Length: 374
Image 1 (tube, one colour):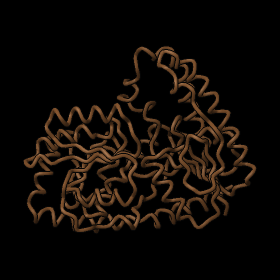
Image 2 (cartoon, rainbow, N blue to C red; image 1 turned 180 degrees about the vertical axis):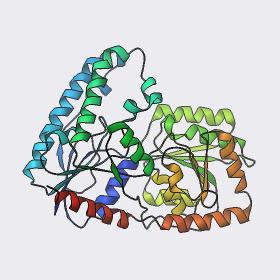
Image 3 (spheres, helix red, strand yellow; image 1 turned 120 degrees about the vertical axis):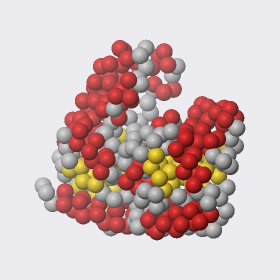
Image 4 (spheres, one colour; image 1 turned 180 degrees about the horizontal axis):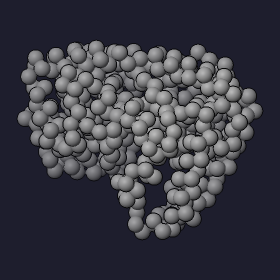
């Protein structure tokens, strides 16, 4: 079976999920993506795409964003032609960092499985929609309508949908009126317990407000031991990091920020954490939580989105409101050596049950089913 993997993902949770799945597929895989994507194979077919708007001052961006959208559609059409020329048995489509659903689906005749990590938040979550800049809302209104329409039309063209959690499946049903099959996520075998002494609280994720790093700093300031905080991010954001550093000074918590570290360094960070706090806003699933548990690290996650599905409440960690105070109470619970030892052991056992091999095997079964449903 020939599978063409189509995506426009950069470093982050969705990219990590795709990379781990593709690495374990026992089929012929060909990757096709624009140059804004971070490839997941050694020999991808790549078409150049360079958005112009981000390189200009904000006042010049509105017309350029329209041109960028048009250019992106041209690239997706050319990528669709490339996919067709490869004569795939099935296309494994994954998100586009600009539109959510890749528009190439609109021009494909091959059967397609679209892995929708989550609906396009800015269209379906009131908080995200209302957060748009009021000064640019009018000039960008036609652009936003076009992006929403392209996303919806592309989702409708997919043969089948898959996703990462029950929460995401529910959100996809509400947004698009389609069912998505939930495939289990996994953990690499490298993520396993060690015997390091706890040194910090850990927060992992992109340097944006929704990931909850600020909440982790405020929680650390409320703990009895005023634990130092380590933030690990997939890529740099100087402005966001500066805000975190100012907040850390204000609340009196030691902060370290590390960017784009290796898996070995990430495993060490998990092992050296008293707890991993993942206080993200409506996270669709949360690989961080299961990776931390696999390393024997108890987790404290926000009680929303797909995060509560990643743990055993009160056994491997806690799901709490997105508020520093209850998170700090949970951290203090781990000050009792017997409590942390018990939760660490349970977390490692729970995390070990998440396997990328199983995830990829089930994905392969779905791809086979889609390919034969012509």
